[in-house]
Image: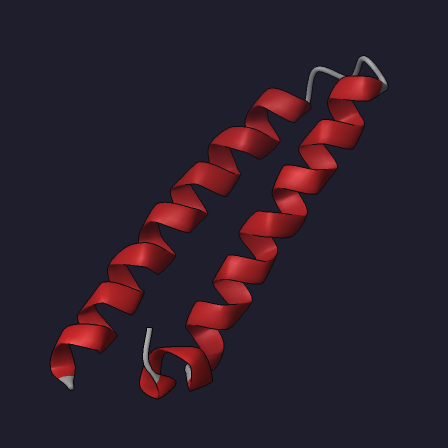
Length: 61
């Protein structure tokens, strides 16, 4: 990654949110809560959008 991707606030916020959702889904799964499946799916979707955005920003340079 280059500086343009790392300084883009939307991309970094998306990556952090996906990471936090993954941690939350692990905690939910440990507590036998069925919402962990939805959290994982949302995390994967969010991660894929952010990777696509980061790739687009990287190719603009």
